Image 1: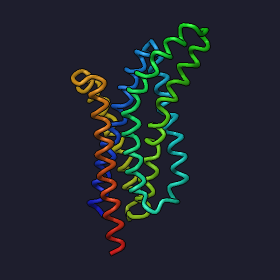
Image 2: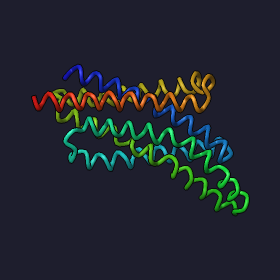
Image 3: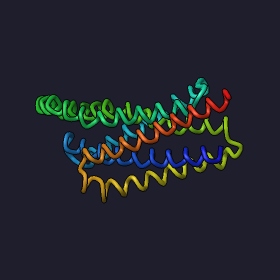
Image 4: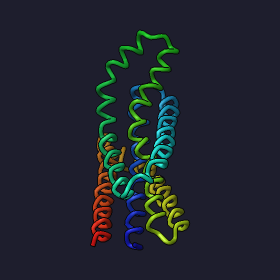
Length: 210
């Protein structure tokens, strides 16, 4: 179980890296679309944190119904990968309609449109992101003897991953690979976390059945 816990911690660090890469990529994407970096940052942060809070609340209440929280976690990570990959495509698709609407609506309505558009784009992936911590916490509640220590470790490694994600995306990924390449990097991180967690969850089920 110690080995499984260590692998989960590493996966959650990777998840934290991906989350912050997404965030900075989305800020860059939406600053081009919405106009104004300050507006893009504040709107993206509001949608990002709102999605995390909603996802944490929703999955925190429903994870007890899951027979295999680790498998549920893997589905969340794979879902984030899919939805995260769609965000740049959706921005590209919606950009002409947004520009057309923004040029014909009053300023107040344009501001509302910006907020609505940002939340529509970002709430789905961030909602799933928000569910990862309570789901992994429930897994540790069921399978770990050192609960407090391991929960603290989850917070620590995810935060550490977030710091790495900020540094990587700001100084390495976006300058070298652009927004598309950075998105691919983040998606790959979620896919890795999801697929490894899925294999771990399946292994645990098989070991219990044996």
